[in-house]
Image (cartoon, rainbow, N blue to C red; front, side, top):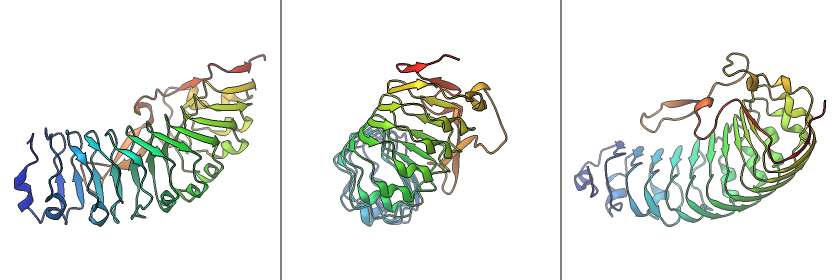
Length: 303
């Protein structure tokens, strides 16, 4: 369809669903773009070579689902559309801080990984009480996580790896009993792992490597009966391994079904409106199931 953005689309003002992903477009978003598509609720232009910046008036658009991942977009992220439910801006060259004015309180999925975002995660993100998926990994974010993020009690997927986040293990996470994946690896987090980590009984993947965590591995970690993947390497953790590691049955058996554990994570489908994708945990990108990493630590393995 490319390389220029298809100009004939500007006359189709009644479009509500538009998918021109992987269409070979190597152009900027035209000036008429958001006027022509004021009625669009679902838009997918991912996996092209879109360049330039996002429009500053994006906060006035009617999008519910917007997918612009894997392009070459630059500049800062403007105010989010007020009705947005699913937003994917990942794998671009977006820079600057995360938006301090978010516009939307209905967001379920937010993916902005692999950009050049800087600064702290703003307090405005605490409005996303119904969020399921938060992926801000592979950026340059720093500082402590706002404690008010504890309102996201429905969240199932948190990926914040490869940033410069600091502080101790976030205490607000103890209320996230629906959490299936937690990836805080490759940051500057420190302090002890909390005893209440055993309350996250739905947790299937836990990645905390390449931080500055210290002290013992909490005994209550053996309560995580659904855990398939645990990575604690390259920290300052020491002391004995907790007894009853055999309770982690899903690490010992390659495929285990049934019980109270989830077999997949459900995220909005970028190709079908009002539909969802079920991602099985053994096939999540860059994660091999049934692995246990404790290298580069001083552990007492006697007994």
